[in-house]
Length: 131
Image 1 (cartoon, rainbow, N blue to C red):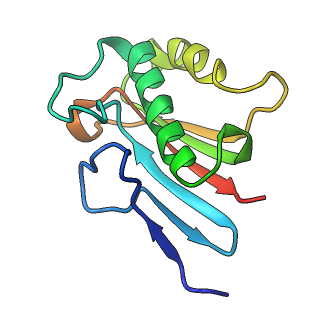
Image 2: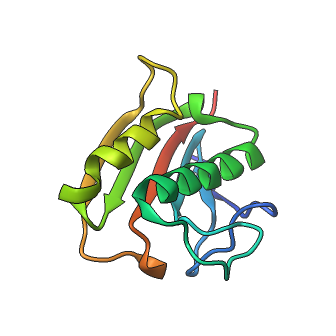
Image 3: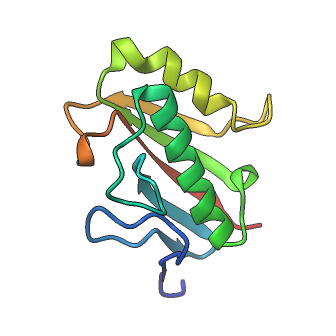
């Protein structure tokens, strides 16, 4: 096994904590959970509502993937964290699934949590396999 490669994507969102955007080992890539922050203005207010925040998170994940030469087709698994599970689960799912081709959804876990960084409503991380 080779040593892990720690990736920071120059066009990616500014980290809200000490982490790499992604860590790669033997073709597997673990993309750190992304927040609904604006990659061009990290101090901007978060988008209103879970649907808009989910779209911003997915767009941020795409930026990271593109920086690695990959896209959503390479995603094998996603973990979704939402703070208002009962209220926001359906709206989050509607936004989330629109990013994937029908019938080609990655495996996924979704959990309700009591809080997220930057007071976000949603955070998503990915496990990706390099072809």
